[in-house]
Image (cartoon, rainbow, N blue to C red; front, side, top):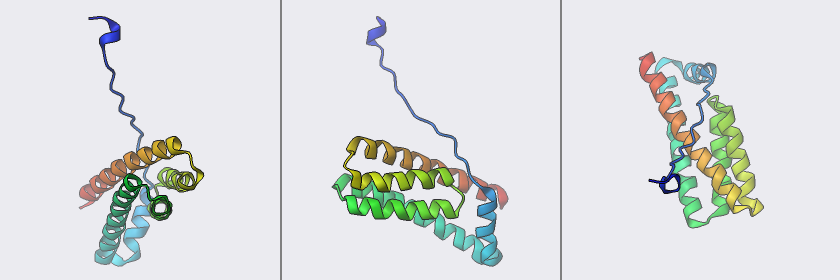
Amino acid sequence: MRNTDRVATLRPVEPVSIDTDCLARLRAAGGETHGEGRLGETLEDLALGLSRVGGAYRRGRFDDIRRECLAIGRIAGLIGLDRMARVAQTSAALSVAGDGVALSANLARLMRMGNDALGAIWDIQDQSM
């Protein structure tokens, strides 16, 4: 087999950086039982936002992409996902800039970061129980 016959599969990986102090503050804000519920609701809002932004992108709804990315950015900042918040803000700006390639790349990065962050936060939650 020649080298030109091989196909490389690239899977971008970005380490998840979670500010656990932010998570602890959010958890403590509502007391022991209400805080857990509040954190769970926040994570659910993040997951739903990621799902909605993906749907908006597939339908070409750029105003919805902008609105959802701004909401995701606020949530990400609230729970200490600063890098993800910046990517969401960049995606929101790109949704009105007309650069489809840059928007696609940033939304793909946002989805990766969001899915990895949700998994990592749930792992932290499982360990603390």
